[in-house]
Length: 134
Image (cartoon, rainbow, N blue to C red; front, side):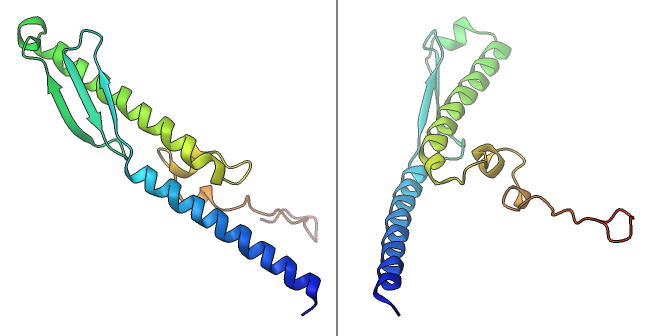
């Protein structure tokens, strides 16, 4: 192995190790993500975890005198949505540096994400006999 080739391989290995270390750090932060959203009136507070799962709902005792059941339900749902958006935003901040150019994070981690997000577009070959092939 030539010295130049060896140095290139060593540089690639160092870069790989650096990126892998950064990805592990980001992944660790993802598992610790928590966000809390509170209604404007301060009566409803919701905390969600890394994947948007509800971890806590705090209701001010006054909520039962001030809000009808349907209003309370709507407020809880709004706070779940707001807290989940915070977690999603932070997830995007943490993971975007690791995404290949041209591959939106939403396709990989968003709703409806699937294996197709990772696969290249199909190659279309020119027909040999004038007929269309895929």
